[in-house]
Amino acid sequence: MTEVWKMIYLARRNPALAAEEFPQAWREHSALGRQCKNVGQRVRAVAQCSRQLMEATAPLSQDYDGVNLMVLADREAGSVIWSDPETLAVMRPDEPRVFADYVRNFSLLCRQQVLHDSLAPEALPQNGQVLLIGFFQRSDEWKPASERLSNCPDAWRAPGLSSASRIVCNTVDEAPPVGYGYRYIVEWWFDSLQQARQAVQNLNTAGSMGEYGWGDAVWMLTEVTHSRP
Image (cartoon, rainbow, N blue to C red; front, top):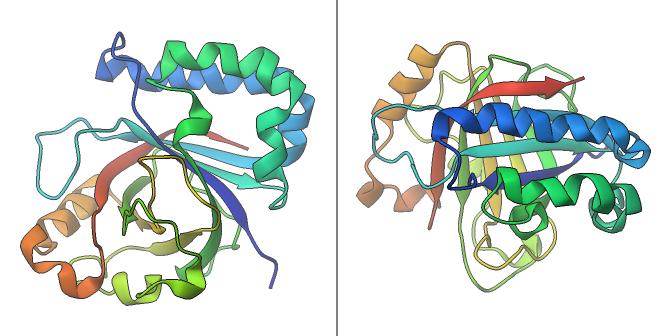
């Protein structure tokens, strides 16, 4: 089976932007990638998942504004893209306008595993798709996958999430930036926002989640506000 590599980042907006303004600013930033030939060759698909602006509901986080899912041409692309001259000249200078930090400082290189669905492994959500996304097992000490105590398939069976139409586990494959030491990133795709909200309501409270191996986690309910191709 062909391996699918992804770059996933957990973004905070520039505080000068209102939460409602962030998706448009993010789309504008993505459009700059058309000027970068190497970006087009190394990134096969992109989905910008913006946080649903709704009343805070446990365990959803309000500390972040979006999750970017990028399917890479190969694992190497996840390293060389950061030193690409076009990216440094065109996209990096625009990052402070949109985000609270430079993108490299909150990005995670991952290997994907589809746990449930019949779509192509490299499929990404399209505009309007609703996703619940969880970042799990944060730790300041990096351990390769072979040394971790639990694995992703044990986590996705938690009550309340079985109604998802697609479940994807992304295993972080290299040491992450400081403060973003998550081990797994899981995507639950839903057919409607109402269905996703119901799933969130059915989740166990934070105090009883230990048996599923979530650990120190961030949960976000999102909707895709930009995608390509």
